[in-house]
Amino acid sequence: MMKDKSILINNIYHMLAYAFQTLNQEKYEDLAVESFDEMYDLLAAILAKGIGLQLKQGLYREYINRQEELPVMRGKINMSRTIKNRLAHKRVLTCEFDELSENNLYNQILKTTIMLLLRNAKVKTKYKDDLKKEMLFLANVDVLDPVSIKWSAIRFQRNNQTYRMLISICQLIVEGMLITTDAGEYRLASFADEQRMCRLYEKFILEYYSRHYPELSVSAAQISWDVDDGIRTMLPVMQSDIHLQKGNTVLIIDAKYYSHTTQTHFDKHTLHSNNMYQIFTYVKNRDYEFGDMEHKVSGMLLYAKTEEEIQPNNVYQMHGNQISVRTLDLNLPFTEIAGQLNSIVELHFDLVR
Image 1 (cartoon, rainbow, N blue to C red):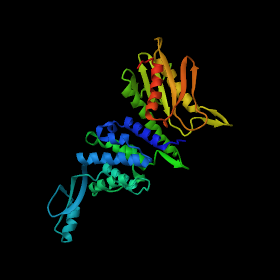
Image 2: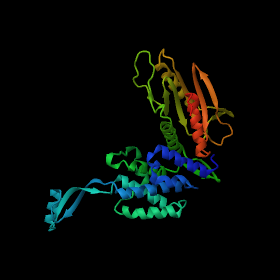
Image 3: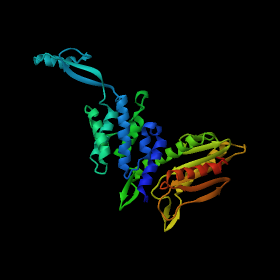
């Protein structure tokens, strides 16, 4: 459970700002200091600001194929339809042509999301007013069935990169809020929402270390399987969340955002077994890559802290490697969250700041 929703929402803004560098621009700085009581208001404010900035640049347009009956030729003639028109004594040509239009998927998603926010009673009037003004510029854009949007199929090109953050915010809104309220407290929503929040949590930690610790090599690196005969056919990819390295010292962090940080069996709390198997496998295979060189490879499960009574805080020495389990309290002021993240790497890599 998350009890102080204003702090939590503010921290989610910071997480979004790390995940989407666009939010660090000066044009968004007023949102960073604004206090939000509802998640809907935060996302509506980001979207309203972002769409307003996009309108100043101009809406993204792309060529769409159109067919229209015209008195003069445009594009190419659809002969069969034109002949039918002639037989019906219609003096028009059926033409097929490409036309630059703002009525494309990207703007349709923006308009659809605005419509959802305008219908939501939780969104404050001031954010709705901004969105209503922006709707005027989307008059020629169609509204989609939100369920039909195939988010994974959306691709960005050089001339619509400015939509990347906007579409991501739309996805958070359309697919369901990050958190929901229950009897005055905040809790994680459905499993699908938990997955989305987990991706944001991973991205936030990765970008935080990338920005603040240039002396480290920071990546979401893939780790090779250490096999005796060189055959890796059909082995799954070992994709780390956060891979930190300085020289021959490595820390692999697996970021987890769950509603429950432990699993329970017959009233006994244990760590999620799959998480432990995964981080141990990553660490051992990365360890083997160094061969006989002097090195240090460690792993960490970093859970977002919940309000559960029992929270993991353990360090294990396993087969020559250290595996630790910690929690990150997202319900603290952001400066304290940053302090928690700083202490992890400064202790592990003996960094002096």
